Length: 435
Ligand SMILES: Nc1nc2c(ncn2[C@@H]2O[C@H](COP(=O)(O)OP(=O)(O)OP(=O)(O)O)[C@@H](O)[C@H]2O)c(=O)[nH]1
Image 1 (cartoon, protein in one colour):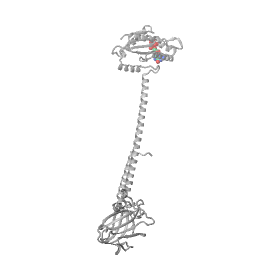
Image 2 (tube, rainbow, N blue to C red):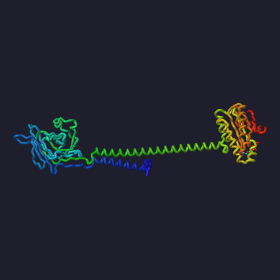
Image 3 (cartoon, rainbow, N blue to C red):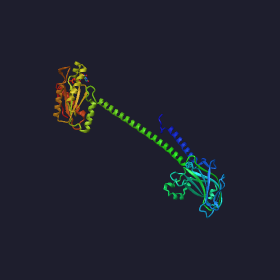
Image 4 (cartoon, rainbow, N blue to C red):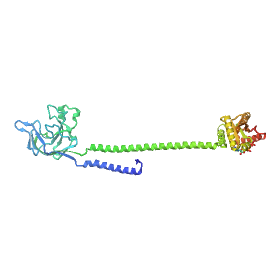
């Protein structure tokens, strides 16, 4: 079955499918925003390692300490005089395997915590392992990305998008980092932590840490949708192009066939014209052919001064009667071809009927015309028959010249009178009658 995209039924079906696909695309695209998020809970979890850090004072001990490690409840007594604060962290790697978790398929970090104390802001950080940055002296030199948020916000379950983090400025400074090291990286996360950066007595409980993301990333969905629709348009374009190519090919073939038919018709017309203008027995012009040639001459050079020779085979009835009609035909053909061979190309030779021929000669003097007529009369004597060189025909010829603006039929009438005279004068002779 050939695919025809101009077919109305196909077009209706194609349009319907397009609308359905368009609606499905819109539903898919809008719907993916409302789908429940993919969630990986990191805390609480079975095997989890958390730790605290703080400033260690010789007399007072460490400023950050557990109140209930199992419940991830801790305190930070950060004095104004301490050089730095305290923090909590969740480790996702081990010493045996220093690489961390790949969160490239997630979009954000979610932390639920309880806080009481004077802090106005909290710092959330993520460390990412990358062998390229790891220095031999410091196995903890993972890339640090952080963001600070007001405590008010932190008291709600926290939703921090990964692209809201910045690479920590002190990490960049310490590493004298190149520009490409300022890129965010979450493909091997080793630590997720919460820092307290303001002095005071802080009490914190970390309830839950999770990473969340869409099942299908918006960019991936966009790429799929755009790729799909571009393929549809491309396919449609290719099919349309192919259709146009086929139509053009069919049109070319039709034009070729029409041209071929025209050529054949022109040839047939030419053949019909030839048949209509030709005497079937002798192959020379008939009356219609003679008229055609004279009409053409009339339009170009005019007929004035042309020589008109009307010739009639003498006693042809007798020849027919004595030797039969077939021989009579043969004689007519031989005589016609003898005349053709001895006339000039521009002269016109025609058989008017029976044993009567007409020759129209190019414009010349009456003497010239009579001279040619005499030559043709003598030529007829060479037209022998029945295999006997003694048996030949003779012709009588009536001759005239076309006067200025004269009709050919008038001149022919005059030639006929001259022919009659020639017959009266004993035949086998030429008679001239001037116009
Ligand atoms: N074989 C043959 N004979 C034809 C043809 N057309 C006419 N004829 C014959 O030609 C003869 C003409 O005879 P006529 O008109 O009496 O003239 P003629 O016998 O030549 O006598 P004159 O012209 O007075 O010399 C007739 O017998 C016609 O039948 C033809 O196509 N073939």
